[in-house]
Length: 293
Image 1: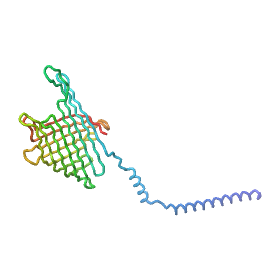
Image 2: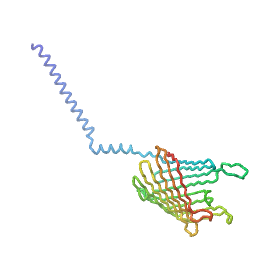
Image 3: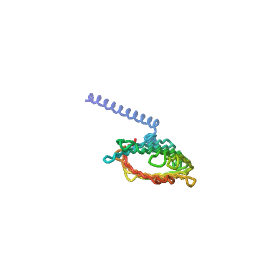
């Protein structure tokens, strides 16, 4: 019987020895790992999270964005006419620079007789197109104060002017900003040039004058998909008796889908000095589809 117990005791002794050796080796390995890789602190964890957050918040907004719009009105019956309104708006933004470019075109086509015996021809009777561009340079990190340069040109067959143009530069401020509303305003000196059409009593002439230009833009979100934009500009002639220009535009935009909106616009233009057969006040109402890109 002892002959059978001796091998069993030897086997148990070897197993116990192997377990002790394995335990000692594991303790040694853990000791080495603790010395080589000390336990991470809370500060280390927060630092690693901040690094990940910084990587994920890289600004990838495009520098150039824009939109284009189109409106159309066609009449048939006793008279044939068509009114087309189109335009494009571009915005460039990088660091402290912001540039805006607006181009608007209004065309009126109608039947027109050269003589009583000739048939009517569908041709352009009136046309108006406007180019406006402004560049702002932010002066401080708060993005409140900026310097601006503005250029404006308009050719309008509906009015008594062949064309009107102005250039201005000055200072502006972002007066008010919340998640739902913003207000900008700027003012500065400038120069204006009006080219008048010839009349029965006066030939075509050009009048130039120095001006003070003031502008204000108010934007407010009325809901998740509705935005109100109110724009006002004044080109005030310094000398009395010279033409001054005032313009106000109200626009309400409703989003139809992600890139398509419906835009309602009401515009008022007022010139202080016009010909006797022309009105000082011009208004324009339009409904257009706007595609953003």
